[in-house]
Image (cartoon, helix red, strand yellow):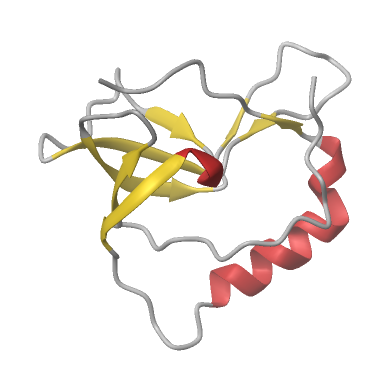
Length: 113
């Protein structure tokens, strides 16, 4: 089990961003930032990923939501809407400082083909 480093900082891509994952051949659209899934480990509050996404251009299929982390992104095809304030980034950074080490870091099983 790998815990989240609460000092980890990176710029989160906006919702709606289209990406390719490493070794992947399908485009994904980012649907959510910092999703938390239930953990099988009772000591952890949950499993956290950087993003959830869906296959583009098909869109959301509730039975096929994909979870991934920023280090698996190979290429940004098109960046989603963001405003000049990007308030979520500030809230996320502060939340991670306070809570980040209580969540397990999600892992990706393999590329999306």
